[in-house]
Length: 70
Image 1 (cartoon, rainbow, N blue to C red):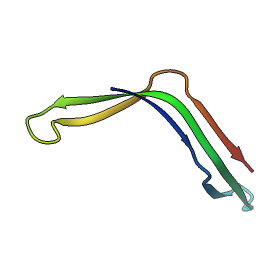
Image 2: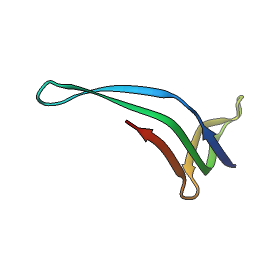
Image 3: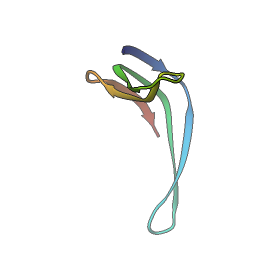
């Protein structure tokens, strides 16, 4: 199954990164968005519900990822 997905969100993720000298630097990631076509593979097929054992996914084409880093 191939799905074309587009997701645009406005999360605000703040990471506290510590350096070797002991100084903590806050790094903010926000305005995350991605667009792309993903392939879903359901395997192996089994006799019990939900009728498959694993779902694998992979990007089908070059995807677009955009975010703001402060």
